[in-house]
Amino acid sequence: MKPARTRMAPSPTGRFHLGSARTALFDYLLARKTGGQFILRLEDTDQKRFVPGSEEEIMQSLDWLGITPDESPVHGGPYGPYRQTERREIYHRHARILVEKGYAYPCFCTPERLEKSRQQQQAQKVDRVKYDGLCRAIPPDLAAKRIVSGEKHVIRFKMPQDGVTTARDHLRGDIVTENKHLDDYVLLKSDGLPTYHLAAMVDDHEMQITHVLRGSEWLSTFPLHVNIVRAFGWDEPVWIHLSVFLKPSGKGKMSKRESAQAIKDGYSIFITDMKDLGYTPEGVLNWIALMGWGVPEDDVMTLEQMIERFNIDSLTPSPAAINFQKLDHFNGTHIRLMTNEDLSARLKPYFVAAGLNVRDETLLKVTPLIRERLVTLDDCLAFARFFFEEVVKPNPEDLVANGLDAKQSAMIARKSYEILSGLSDIAHAVVEPPMRAYVDASGYTAGQVFGILRVAVTGQKVSPPLFESMEIIGREKVLSRLRYAIELLDGM
Image 1 (spheres, rainbow, N blue to C red):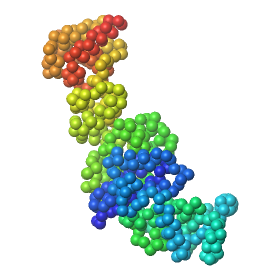
Image 2 (cartoon, rainbow, N blue to C red; image 1 turned 90 degrees about the vertical axis):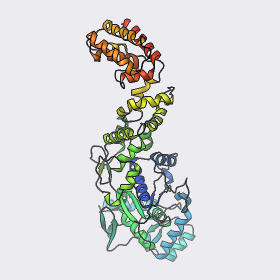
Image 3 (spheres, helix red, strand yellow; image 1 turned 45 degrees about the vertical axis):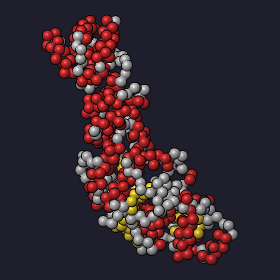
Image 4 (cartoon, rainbow, N blue to C red; image 1 turned 90 degrees about the horizontal axis):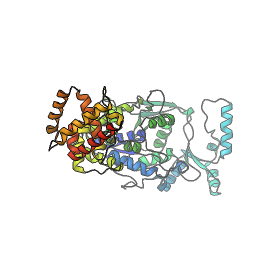
C-alpha cells in the first residue's frame, strides 16, 4: 500500500471526546502502517460556535495519547496554513472556479425568504425540505452585475437533479442516492467564510489527503461531497465513515444526559477528563481502538502492536456501545504491563497533588505492592497514601477486631508493640515469624491480630501486604502509630 496521508479535522467548537480520539487514532495507525503522514487541520470557520481553549485541548489530548500529528497549526508543514480561517482566499478561488464551470451559482435569497419557503414546504408535507432553486435560474451575467453592485449573497452548489449519485464508502460499499432528493447546499457564506462542504473538499485535495476517515454523521451529505470533488475533476480519496458510538445501554447515541451520568459514576467521554481521572493513554487507546475495529474485543495491544496489525479492511460499520467497564479492564491491564520505574513516575504526581512528601526511593518500593490493585492511577492514594503520611489517624472503631471488645483489642495491640519494639530490624522476614508465633499461642485468629495491626499502622482496613508495608514505613513510624492506636483503644 502506498504511503497514506490522513487528516483529522475537528472544529474547535467544544471538548475533545472519544469519538474524535478514535478517528485520530485510526488516522495515525494508517499513516504509520504505510509510512505516510497524519495531519491535524482545524476547521474553524464556524466562528459563532467557537469555544476558547478548544484548540489547545485538541492539541493536548493528542499529545497525551501519544498520537501527535506530523503536520498541524503547531508543527507546521508543507501544505499550510492548517487553520481554515487562514485559507480564505483559497476557498474563494475554488468557489469562482465552480461558478465559472457552471457547477455553482450565487444565491441572493434573504433569510426571511428562505424561512418562508421552508414553512411552505413543511405545510405541503414534502418528503424533504430543501432550497427551492429560485436563484439557480438567474443568468450568470445578471448574477455577476448584482454581485458587483454589492448585493449580499452566498454561493450554492448546483446539484444534478436527474439520475443518481453513486458514492463509494470503503466499509459500506456503493451508496446510491436519487439526485432529485439532493439539496443545493451553501458552499460560501455571505461573510466570505466557506462551509465545511467546500472547505474540507478543497483542503483534502490541496493537502493531498489519500484517505478520509470521519464520523458516520457525514453520510447524509456524502453525495454532495462526492459531486464537489468530481466537479473539480479531482481523484477521490478513500472514504471511510466510521461506526457510530452508542450509549452504554446500547440503545441510541451517547447524549449529554448520559455524559453527565457517566461523570457522576467516575467516568467521562472527554479525553482530558480521562487523564485527570487516572486513566493511562495506553488503556484509553486500547479501549477506543476496539470499538469499530473488527478484532477480538479483549485484545490487549500497545500502540506499536496496533500499528503492526492495523488494516482498514478490518474496520466495521457496526455500531459500538460504550462500555466503561472495558475501559477499566484495559487500563488496569496496561498498568500491570508497565515497569516499576515507569509506573512510579506516573503515580508520583497524584501523591504530590495530595500534599504528600514523596521520596522516589520509597515510592519505587511501594509500587510493586499496589500495582495489582490499581485500576486507575489515582487509586494509588486509596491504597498507599499512608506510606507518605507522618501520622495516620484511624477510626477507633476500626481498631476493634471482629468478635472482640476494645479491651481485648488494646491487649493485642500492646503485645504487638512489645514484640516489634524488641526487634532491631522491622524487615518483613524478621517480623512475620514472631507475630505468627504470637497468633498461634494467643488463641486469637490471624485476622484479628493482623487486622488490628493493619489499621494501627496504615489507618485503613484494607492495605497492601502488611509486613512488607511495615518494612517500608520504618520501625520508628510503626511503633509510633501503634502507641497512638493503644491510646485510642484505651480511651474507648
